[in-house]
Image (cartoon, rainbow, N blue to C red; front, side, top):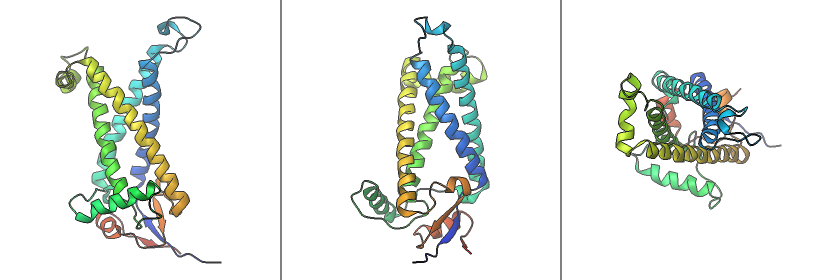
Length: 237
């Protein structure tokens, strides 16, 4: 029986893990309630406004989830400042970054049998940047619609410009709706890549968002970068 010796790399702080799951639950709630707001459900032929699934309740749940998500996102930014190990930048200024990204992408598309070992591969690093851009768009367009009836309060003054730039509330709603679907597409791809890496490489990819650690047999290429950004690896007993 072959004995594998692996190193344990502490990667994610408790702060990141807690707010990661709060944001996940918020996104699921926002998407479901958002679909109901876009196309209300009719029960027993009665108008949607007066059904047992009151649209007031659906909208209020949507708004509560939105404010919860924003609070978690702000605290995630604080954690990014407070805990160096949570800062996982895509190293776009390094030439090998692009070669490594293509290499990992080909592996995930089943066009290559494997890729070099990473703690956080360059494709994942880049995808998170794309996610945060989409999240920012959702926050801006969401609050622009939320405060559009109150242009003179602080919210209207902070977000009213979004409707002006996009050309009206209908376009803002359309952008908000489309980007919400893009986030769900990202989530599906994210779950696929996490489960695939866990099943094929057995490095604790899925469990790392609970435990904060990953297990690698080979020294990851980005280990020096992680050591610069956060805690150093410790050997498994």
